Image 1: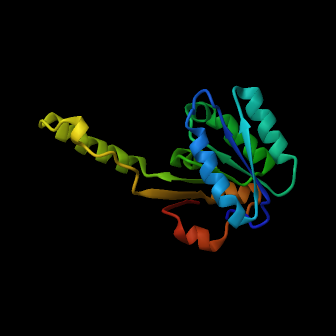
Image 2 (image 1 turned 180 degrees about the vertical axis):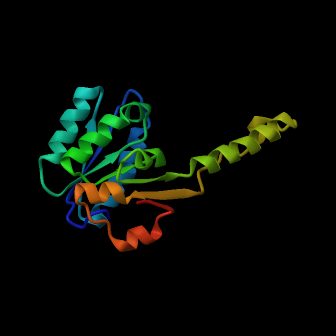
Length: 171
């Protein structure tokens, strides 16, 4: 856990650009009992919704934020990262570029691995394999990126045990 004091985690997403959000919320809700935290879902449709949701989460103690992967959140990542820093919220993102752009922590599939695997499928199709004969694949390689510059600037203490597991630490 990013911070042992977190008692509530809010997931922000735009249901119009992330119709799969229910799958993420199911996974989050399945995990929260073992972590002794409450899960809250917050739909954000525009910049004002993002600001309102983050302000609400940031104004209450012991809150954390999970920015779900969707094109809306990607487009508005600069605003999200800046607001999260302003409220000093422990936040986890799905894509590594959120952390490299100043977000605290990113954990998700290694996109370069996905691209390599996609290229293998394209190669097989170009050599005559029918797409229907190729198995559906799930990500198998995940990466954890921690931005210690952001942690320091926001006063968030990242546990050493989490830093030790990181694939990349930004200092």
